[in-house]
Length: 227
Image (tube, rainbow, N blue to C red; front, side):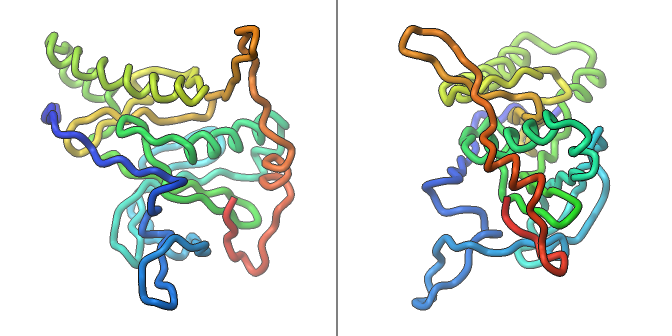
């Protein structure tokens, strides 16, 4: 079991703070400023397969420029088009990841697509699944259980504060960072909602522009485009 470090993890705000090194370039004054940068699969070295899913797989990759390791989620567009709700789900997952800013939720670094695949680059959780450690250890001591539950509650509070419900909470979807902190992941079933003035909860639908972007956008000469 990884150490239960009490030191806080660094947070990475996707919208207002400086983005991942993947999305930085030098401006005319030689300062590092946020900019739109095309990222392609060729920018990464594939190291190993770390997960398989219904629509694709997750790879451990290394960025050729920064040498940082990340998790690359690859989704087949062909499989997504079998059912309209699949497109809505992956568009919603990307949007939710983009606005999630919690040290206890997995961080998205960037996303892009080619003519036949979607790519989501996320931070790599070196500790693996909590499910694995539960099976290996067999029994959690009270202070260990309290530690994990506390961080999971903080992750859920952050999501609910942003009007997002995860809907798939289980040990397989809780990863551990290299220093033993929890990272909630897999937002494929997550939904955004809003509370009306009458206090009623209604589900937000993925907008048509996002669905069209996933379904119809093509790239020239396999150049990847941001989602």
